[in-house]
Image (cartoon, rainbow, N blue to C red; front, side, top):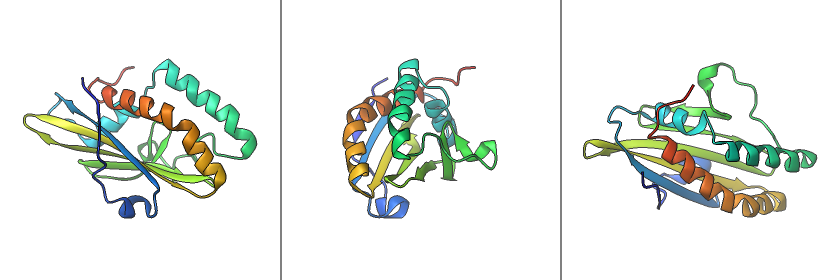
Length: 161
């Protein structure tokens, strides 16, 4: 499957007013019945070991700064996708993310028709609040791009386990 960087096609003001960063990655998926929640579950429920390892390292590094190392506890299981709280969802779009003292972020998973297939697009929006947020964003961007490409590719795979 070919995952490609695309121009973000969301109203950033609607999902995260003032966002200073936006990117998006997209792929065609052969599953004509996939919806946004299923795509998001495939993307965020099971991470490759190297992604899990990077997240554990990130948590060790940011904990002394008082940054969140886990999402707030869910009200119920349907309010989470992997480690992310779900903020809104329709069959075509799922919005997840949370706010922290250094930055706020949203990940938007869109699913649309694409000539007998479905196009899955993951858009990331970030609003930094301070120098720590800007430094954090700069440090994680190279990893972010590789991780999101990997996660979008997982949208074509059935959920494991």
